[in-house]
Length: 166
Length: 321
Image (cartoon, rainbow over all chains, first blue to last red; front, top):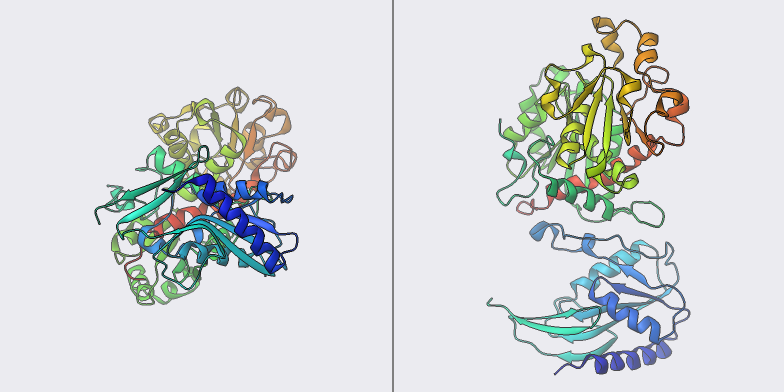
């Protein structure tokens, strides 16, 4: 039911529209590890952004450290040292509770005060828990509470919906 | 004595008291976690909010500059609140027992103790006695262990040498009194190096040192052959008085590392020293400041490695938070 090329096209159109509307100048694109980076790589190319893609690993900024501890295989974020005054396009694969974006914004703001940030997600599912919403999405879907949606990749990109017995 | 005390019920790090009792997988996890704190572009370590709201007490019963400072920086980079207690000049000198000091600090809702003590086993004792949610890190106990030093040295070695399994490592100097040497030997053997060679006069080697999993040499010139990593130990000057050694200049002649002697090791060998260095006693200034020296990198790496150990030990401390 979810066709990735179509979702990527939708997201590209939405991003172009939002970039024009919000008048982004010389934007810096940042992908959130892992799935967000795969989507960001596609968008980075399609929007012909010249500055290298920024990579963000939010593991050290998560709010569940004291419940579930360290995440394995954390890699250092790779961002320009100065974000002061920049226009930023933040990209993730799936938007769900909003907590990942909260963590990502916290990390970005540790590097400086961007001028503006827009946030794009390939898929927005229901279940948000904090007042953050993507500016651009490839599609929106509704899932049962026990269901999880996951992007696998990078080649080929595909979408897996898992049903857990919770 | 069991070392299971270092792991919690699901096998995760809880206390870090000694390398003994940890397997290769856990040591590697520490090294990988430490690497994740370092920005590959510039080597800088960014502050992260992992331990926000946690309180860490540096409990130093023995003087230290490097170790205490890098523990403090590591805790601050993790956003923890840090208290530095120089016990030598406070409570115990007024007659308070170690246990009472601990109880008082626990009452201040502390989450972790970083302990340095002149008595072997002090950190272990505190880990046994303290409240169950508190983690204890050994920052050096008597002649027993200095496991975070060993881990930062492993991290430094890994930055320069791709594969532990092919390495021949020489540890040179006062093995007998060195807690650093003991921890290094355990860490190197756990990570599976090809050979750990100790090079020292007989008077500065423990009895049956071979049982630690090392080869032994009493001659620096012979011992340095085929060596990839040269680890110098500080000659503790107080040992001179105990008739274990003739005098400093005699020691330097036999066991001091000079440029000339370093040439016997492999050409790409690195030179390490846990500090503080005694120039002209165990190491010549030209070597300490030379191209092959990684001594200051060891100090820098202390921050990331101690961050990794503290974060890993605190990761299941959510109950009281």
